[in-house]
Length: 326
Image (cartoon, rainbow, N blue to C red; front, side):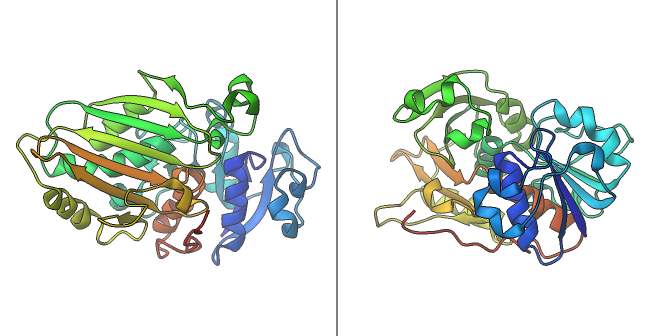
């Protein structure tokens, strides 16, 4: 399948180029960037020097099987009609077409989260990948909600690295301001609350903190069950929910330094690690989920969804296991 990546100069775009290049069933046809057109890809993504590619301008799009849109909010909606003329399938990584929105061509966007929506993806021509923090929270919470373990609102305490803000610098991403700060930049009302509510079926109360890391998302979800439960009860629910899904690992360690999911060990991978704890009286469940925001939370989630849509093994091209120490 021939593939173009629009927004290829961004961090997510760079990860898409890396994943598509190494995917055995995908052929990287174009790396598209308006701002960097004509420049070598390696000037922006030095890890991809071996590709020998040059950024192409959007007006030079050629027909392909699939186009990945790694564009800022609002930009996908502006270009989607033109892209639809040259690409049979569109995988959008922006917020523009989430929640089952219709494209200009009348196609309905399917949710690119195979762990929960795999049945909707086969044959899909339009796929929208959820946001990175939403993906982590939804994977943590949906099994509990479906098992009847959620009573009332859920508190979602999310932490995110600087790459989640994109490649364009701003005052808040300046190293002198962010380098050692734990900045609570969205104490209430984050836009991912709507995604979590729609996809997990819970009412989230979300707080987001920018932490001094480049990659990674970690969410700590505080859940009140309708009646006391044990950690074993919660682990059983999570393990049953994800036993057939290769990219969710339920962490149940009771010993060692790293007993709860930590995004530092997931850099470059498509895994989501989920762990849990329960108060001694059984009245509060704490679920921790971690992932790489640029891979499982964006580029990898898009490739995984395309795999399912085209009948390929879900993990094709996504086998990298991560590093330790990281």
